[in-house]
Length: 248
Image (cartoon, rainbow, N blue to C red; front, side, top):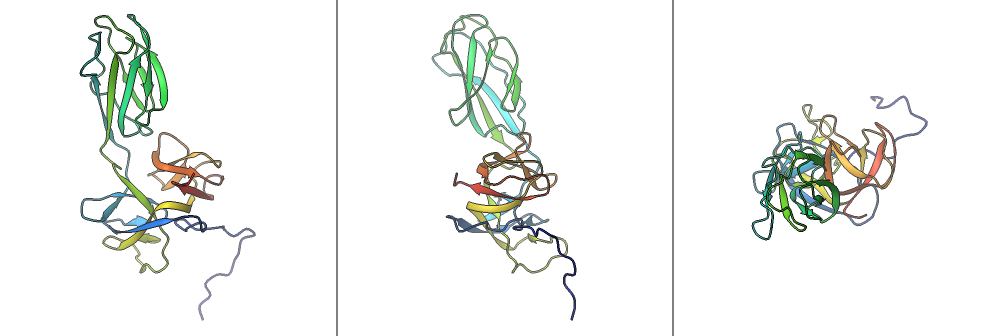
């Protein structure tokens, strides 16, 4: 009889990537993998092109479109038309509102969820929440309440669906080990607790970002944000940690 294992560590891993971590409320959906390389257990999946299709994530890409409010502004200032957008920026409309009147009036910036994420002044460049640099020009009477927008549209990783659930019943596939292969119908967790591999030191309560270059999870805002996900346990690079999706 073949020997499967002859050495053992003093502290066996508490879980495997993609394993459901506990019996808290959990929801999973069935989706067909479209990506040729498959989707590894514990990795994020994004909505594909076909009905009930999903694809693996990739390098972050998004566009930004700046505009002035269509009505209500007293000044005739403009905002950078196409500011650069980096990972960490949220998809949706950012709103910038002048809080005083003047040629260098201060302003505040809110993210698509209504949270204040930064501030600046008219006629000075700023980079906030991964967006920029952008500038609000000084034209006309720049007045308190004048409003500008930056609309962020993801062109990659556009629609996060869930995390690939570990399934030992998946047929072995040399080209996609520990993964759902292409055209396989897999289970993806949309809410619940899951074990994943940390890519840097994290602590419980940190927001969750995913690094597509190594498939690990960090709190680094230059990586790809997993919406509504929080680290529930801490650890270092390479450690198995627990994340909570839509439960914290």
